[in-house]
Length: 154
Image (cartoon, rainbow, N blue to C red; front, top):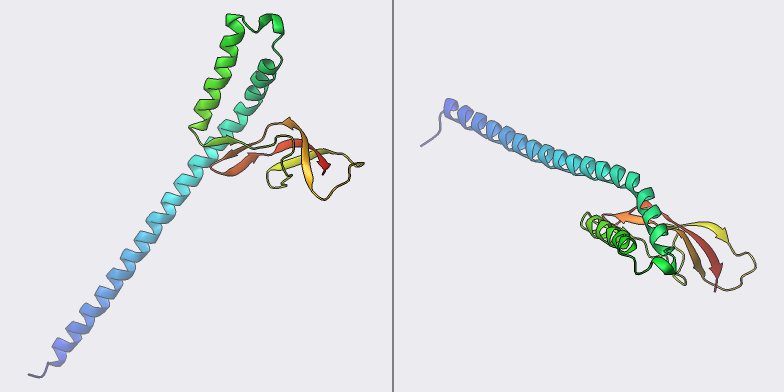
């Protein structure tokens, strides 16, 4: 049975409306994904800003625990400060904050390390870390503060 012109027009209109609906759904899905990405980025930026404000405090606690006099090593108060630093480190680890490896002998990586001093007299093929001057950290595997290091050649 042949279709009437009116019926063909209606089918064409239904097809156009269906395509419009599909495009609208796709646009909305893309919008939803973009908003979710923006929320995640904003959350991570806020987290990074807060952690950056805490890092000097962490540095100070770390320096204090590294220089505890021998006479106070067994003191309960000094041990409490050391435990405080460990608890703070564990809490920050739960936020995906990781310390950048900048131990002596580790190969220098400009994406993670900032060379503050360089041993010009050293000879060798590879640039390696001679000393870590300030700890660096990554948040969600991205550096938020580079390790300040002294570099030499090996």
